[in-house]
Image 1 (cartoon, rainbow, N blue to C red):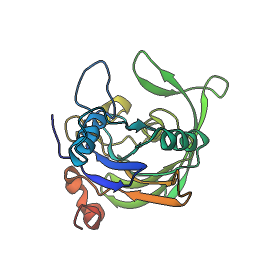
Image 2: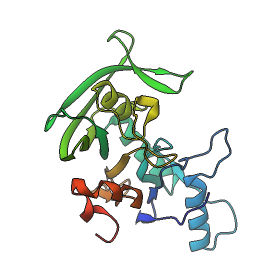
Image 3: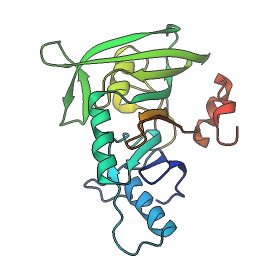
Image 4: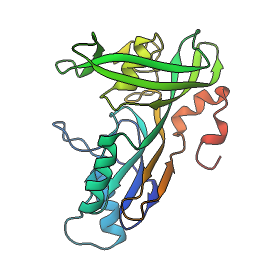
Amino acid sequence: MSAELVVLYEDNHCLAVAKPAGWLTMGDATGDPTLLNNARHYLRQKFAKPGAVFLGVVHRLDRPVSGVVLFARTSKAAARLSAQFRAGTIEKVYWAVVAGRHVPREGELRHSLVKDAARNRAVVADAETGRDSRLHFHRKGRHGAWVWLEVRPLTGRSHQIRAQLSAAGWPILGDRKYGSREPFVPGAIALHARALTFTHPVRREPVTVVCPLPETWRRFAVLGMEPFFAGG
C-alpha cells in the first residue's frame, strides 16, 4: 500500500497530514505501511536529510478512520502537544455517517466504557468499572436511513465515538465491529477526523487544521457534503 502524502499544515514545529482510511498511524505487529513513515519520507525528501528524521506521534486515529493527524517536528513540540491532548484542551471535530431513523438534531451521549483487550473494542459497563465517556453530536444531514453527524468528543477514550454511537443505536456505516450491517469501503468506516484545533507549541496561538473528505465519501453527497471535498 502506498499513497502520496497530503499535507494540511506545516511549519518548523508541527506537521499535520491527511490519513487515508486503512492506514496505520504508527507501526504495529502487522508490519504494514504507516502514516508516520510516509511523513518521515516526505520530510527526508523535502529537506534532503540523509539520516533519521524526528517526528513525534502525539495522537492516533484508528486504522479504518480517515482524517487529520498531527505530528510534532521537535521534541519540545511533542512534549507540549502531548500535554494538550492529555489535558483535553485540543478541540476535535469528527464527521460520521450512521444508520438510524430516530437521531435527534443534537444532544450529548454519556456512557461508561471499558476496553475489551481480547477483542480490541470498547464496551459499555457500569459506572464503577467503566471510564466516563462523553460526546456532543449535531445532525448535519439525513437521507433515508443515512444520517450525517458532526461529533465532538468531550473525553478521549479508545474507540469512544464508535462505541457510543453504536450504544445509542446508530452504528457507523461499515463498522462491523460495532454492529454495522451496511458495507462501506474495504478497510474503512464512515468516520472522518474533520478538524483539529490546538495551541501552537511555540507561538502559543490557536491553530485549526481542516481535512477535506476523502473521495470514497462521494456516495454520501446526497447528504449535502459536496462542498467539503478537496477542491470543493
